[in-house]
Structure formats: structure tokens, C-alpha cells
Image 1 (cartoon, rainbow, N blue to C red):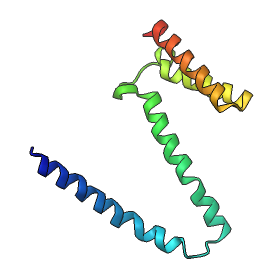
Image 2 (cartoon, rainbow, N blue to C red; image 1 turned 180 degrees about the vertical axis):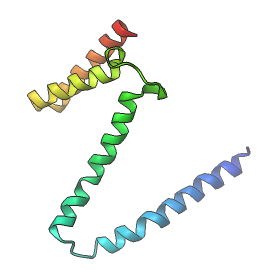
Image 3 (cartoon, rainbow, N blue to C red; image 1 turned 90 degrees about the vertical axis):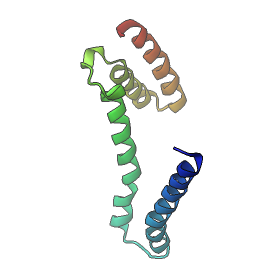
Image 4 (cartoon, rainbow, N blue to C red; image 1 turned 120 degrees about the vertical axis):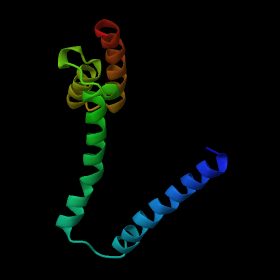
Length: 108
């Protein structure tokens, strides 16, 4: 593949992405939405992020691991529990990373 072809594809994808996403944003930013709809729409980013994270945690590198031998799953559960208890994002993140490194060395 040539560099011209790759850049054409990248630019084409950017234009297609803009064409699909911009009109709804432009229209919805000028319309007063009912409270229930704004609330419902507010859950979309969290749902998308949760879907991406769960997929990466449960199937790291596209491979199913048993829960007891999955350092990603074990560390993420512990990190969630630490955050829930402490409400410290930075503290939970640091503890989660350290726990993941320790679990990865111990399990796999």
C-alpha cells in the first residue's frame, strides 16, 4: 500500500465520521430536550466506556481466562472496591496498577 492510499483512507474516514456525527450534534445543541431524554443520553458515555473496559478485562488479548487466573479481572475488581471505599481516583489507580503488576507476576 502506498502512502497516498493510506492518507486517502484516513482522510476519507475522518470526513465520513464528521458527516455522520456533526448533524445530530448541531441539531440537538439548538433544541431544548426534555429532562428524561437528557438524563437518558447522559448514560451513553458511561455505558460505552464500561463495555470497552469489560471486554478488555474479561478477554485480554481476545483470550478467555479463568477468573482465578485472570490478573486483569482480579486487579480491576480490587481497584473498584478500593475506589468505592476510599473515593480516591488517584489512590485506587495506583493501588490497581501495583496490584495488577503483583498479580501478573504471581499468576501468569
